[in-house]
Amino acid sequence: MWRQRKFDLIVVGGGPAGTTAARYAAKAGINVLLLEKDRDIGVPVRCGEAASDEGLRIFVEPDPRWIKSVITKLRLISPNGRTIDVDLKQKGYILDRRIFDYDLAQYAAVEGAQIVCKAYVDGLLFDGDKVSGVKGEYLGEPFEVKSKLVIGADGVESRVGRWAGLNTVVKMKDMESAIQKTISGIEVNEHRFDFYMSREWAPGGYLWIFPKGPNAANIGLAVSGKYSRFRSAQRYLDDFLQKTFPDGSVVSTTVGGVPCDKTLKKFITHGLMLAGDSAHMVNPMTGGGIVPGMRGGMLAGETAAEAIKEGDTSEKYLNRYAKKWHKVGGRNHERFYSIKETVSKLTDEELNSICDAVEKIPPEERTIGKVFRKAIFKKPSLLVDVMKVFAGV
Amino acid sequence: MIKIKPGKCDFCGCCVAVCPVDCIELKEADISIDYNICIDCKLCLYICPIEVFEDVETAEV
Ligand SMILES: Cc1cc2nc3c(=O)[nH]c(=O)nc-3n(C[C@H](O)[C@H](O)[C@H](O)COP(=O)(O)OP(=O)(O)OC[C@H]3O[C@@H](n4cnc5c(N)ncnc54)[C@H](O)[C@@H]3O)c2cc1C
Ligand code: SF4
Ligand code: SF4
Image (cartoon, rainbow over all chains, first blue to last red; front, top):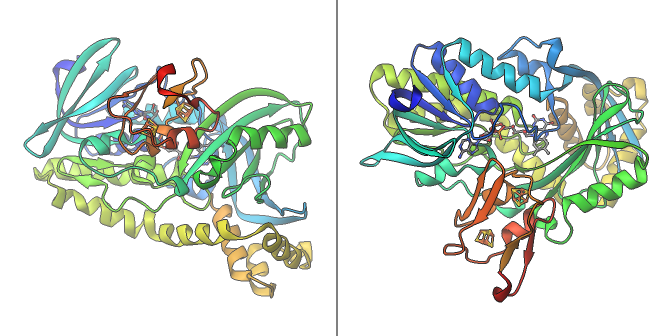
């Protein structure tokens, strides 16, 4: 019984970051317990479910069971309704995250990790200043479990880090307040991502249409916390749906917060590492956090196994995880953050004029590379940067 | 003072992430505020995507 045992590693949270951390740690031979507060892994889905083929392949072979649409094109829609279509060099997918997340948990379990759902963690155990386990509630009963290491993969809430004294609070301007509805009974291009960029539709964020086959789509938007206080994300989305798909059926609604921030300065302390949304690893430009979360999870899981084998779980030793993240995963993070800052300051007029200029490039020449070479207009590098980043969601 | 409208919350964690004093608790399908800690900054009210919170006079809470 897991409550009576001591583990090398406890992972809190069963999203992509947590299950990937558990998988790589277990694979490297240490014993791992993963605790998830919800009843099922993968449910509820709080996600647009877009991910690139290239990104996923680092960790898994894409499986047709969890692919709802294969995406080959990207469309940007300007505030005045102009459209720019670009062919993607790397294909993307719209996933079914219920199946995807469940499979990620399976991979971890197959490697030997023990996964427990309905296990709510509400605090950490300490040995001096070192984290030495977690406590919480399982089916109404309190529990305490000891471990040599803890990985906090508790998503946007990121309370595990706070309990250990890390500052994980998301600043309002960097928090995207998001809502998405899955709309059925509509016609969409099943191979195209659509992004609407406009202060009118989604100030400080963007609106997306991600197809799930030809007759359904995840339609959602994110509004920066800088603006959400004046009007909620829900009201923006209802306006758009009313105007654009008044007859569609809403088969699912989800809400969430996306921390579009730089990765936390400090996401490691004695006996504890954070991974995924909890460490602010989401791509701050696109809000895509599946692949970055898995990357953080993998690096944290591998580092955990090394630390256990070396018998050193100090902050100093674990800091090699931060180094690896900044070298591999976080390489573009700061750049994406500064692009986000610039884009979010553009007025609708500026966005329109950028789109007008790109529109003059003949569609057949409009690959991202060619746009980059041919475009001579207001802020060419910026637009190309935006497209490149979206293309690799 | 901040009040939670019953039955509305989707348990997404967005408000928890911006709360400066960590006084919101989300279990699987249960949200609560620890009013002993809450500093009434209203950030949760400003960020919630679906308007779960409302700002009321203290006496009503
Ligand atoms: C509306 C919306 C749309 C999005 N669209 C996309 C997209 O199209 N593409 C993309 O790549 N990303 C998207 N994202 C971001 C993406 O969903 C996240 O970045 C990703 O899920 C992060 O993974 P994670 O494992 O870090 O956290 P999560 O997936 O959030 O997992 C955290 C887990 O921890 C559990 N947990 C939390 N606290 C505790 C506790 N105290 N005890 C036990 N368990 C706990 C939670 O229940 C949860 O299961 C979107 C996000 C939102 C909100
Ligand atoms: S008002 Fe401020 S302190 Fe109180 S619960 Fe909301 S965010 Fe937290
Ligand atoms: S932001 Fe709103 S929906 Fe999300 S957990 Fe907080 S109150 Fe609930």
